[in-house]
Image 1 (cartoon, one colour):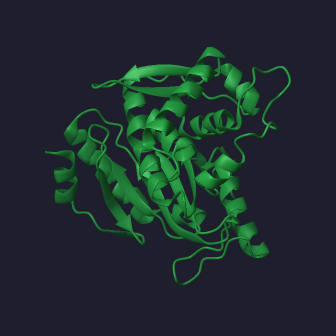
Image 2 (tube, one colour):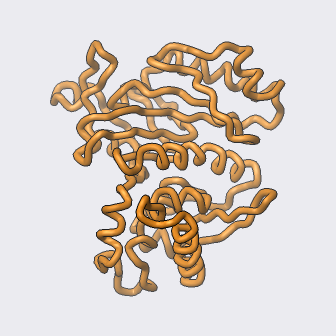
Length: 286
């Protein structure tokens, strides 16, 4: 959890709100706020680095480069479906899809056997998802968070993380996607914190000096549909008054994610509400 003093950044030229909706924010500044974020690599870079050994650490069971990237991604997602890992690390235009899935399965089984990940089988039809163990947090040298997810929390995490998979498959080969699930940001000069379901930035270049798009994702936490409708309206009220947009290099879209069917609804675009109450009701199916 970190507070970003935007006044100091403005004085240093680190963050300056421009009239065209852009903020002078680079990847370094973004990572000061969203400290657990993962940045994707194009498949050509993953393949080039596949035989690197720098990720091997004394005292830890050996992990390959792709396995190390998988642990970093799970850290950012908190709970990762297999297809998210496949899309970000194993897929390539130069190999058949089934080879990517087989490669992913083999490496994730190895991580499980070496004690780095917990494996869950959920849903119907069943699919596999993964969380980190204490050994994985120690390997990454990152402070652990609670991975004892309730079924409801697991459903929320898996729903919002479908946004990562979709963006990854659209942008990974041509852009650099940065993503963090459930960041915690202290708001300037206030005691309260901002806890969106996820945030994402699509950078145009490796240096992260120019962004194509940005997103804030929110998944209603309420159980009942009418409560979810009320929660969506409360989110609309919050984002109509907040200035959290300033943490992004471009004004992000605010996207709602249905935790039952994973459908997305854009609630805000360019800080303006674009979905009506009836749109939200239709998105919820009520």
